[in-house]
Amino acid sequence: MAFDVHAARAEFPILARQVHGKPLVYLDSAASAQKPRAVIEAMSHAMEHAYSNVHRGLHTLGNEVTEAYEAARRKVAAFIGCDVGEVVFTKGGTEAINLVAAGLARTLKPGDEILLTQMEHHANIVPWHFLREHWGAVLKFAPVNDDGSLDVEGFQALLSERTKVVAFTHMSNVLGTKNPVRELTRMAQDAGAQVLIDGCQGIVHGPVDVREIGCDYYVFSGHKLYGPTGIGILYGKAERLAALPPYQGGGEMIGTVTFDEITYADAPHRFEAGTPPILEAIGLGAAIDWLGGYDRAEIAEHEAKLYRRVREALNGANWLRVLGEAEGKGAILSFTVDGAHAHDVAQILDRYGVAVRAGTHCAEPLMRRFGVTSSARASFALYNTEEEADAFVDALTRTQAFFA
Image 1 (cartoon, rainbow, N blue to C red):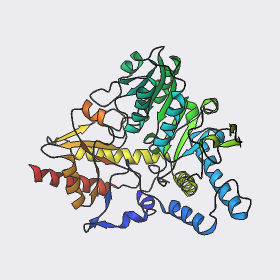
Image 2 (image 1 turned 90 degrees about the horizontal axis):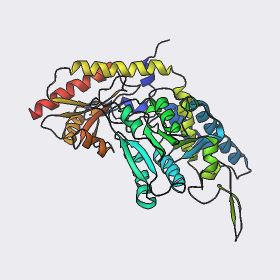
Image 3 (image 1 turned 180 degrees about the horizontal axis):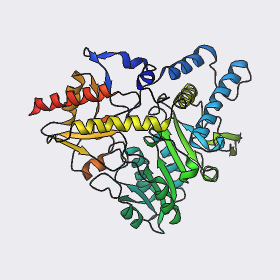
Image 4 (image 1 turned 120 degrees about the horizontal axis):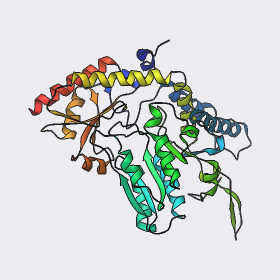
């Protein structure tokens, strides 16, 4: 059976509400997606029927919630194609990147290079700047072409024997560009570098197999994947995680503790100090189960059709500038309107019930690359409809008339 957007949409209670007396058109899923009833109910059920702390309790509630928590880890492993011991729960994609950066910092010497790209989110820039500031690492940025695609030749030209870490996004949160992650990984590893991929957008819009990609690390967050906030995933090859030192100290991540010495647990628990995001992990597991009920290819085509519908409707609008039109890009439309600040555009669209993001999208270097200080962004998800795409076009046209 083909993907039924209306049936899927009915599983999201919040989408039935109105904003300013108009039906909500939620086009901000790249920032945070809405949650299906399956996720809401899974977390509620855990709080109502089987909540306790995990791992160290021997009572019934402790055993039940520990099983639910570790079952979520198994679901993640199956979802991305890795072993269970290679899945670390974090509080988000940002913390996952920081965990790796902090661990790798101890392996770098002054002058060692870290290669990023101009399209990275701040979460995949700032942690590496810490290594520049405190450890003497040198940051380099692969260029982005005018159409928003990565300059792959420029990327390869920046690789050298001094390159120790390469970190890049799977899919740009601004441009929608989908990078050739397998090819980039091979190039970087051939140069002797470890590879981290920011998959916070990429994993939402298509299947991910980390073994096939071959990367050393892959990170993503739960809240963009129709799961809750406060939960993220770090995948790391077993040998890479074994070599990383602990990121934080506390309960659960230890082997033994005495007044004189300490030993650490094996991965993944060595990186999960203290009480973990228990309910959030259960919610993420429910989101993965729920998403698994759909054909990911059909969802991707549905989202692509919505994007094409909007672009065709706005074709010829000489007051609109679109950032990023790379071939095969995801359903993200970042744009500017002549004579209008992005914040003003977003606020007026909201009066029509249309929710979009506005600002730098945590990608200031990319904004500078395209010569803008901010932009508005409409991002499409599996629950958006053709009627909503048309409503966005109509609202945006009316908004532009306000500034004409």
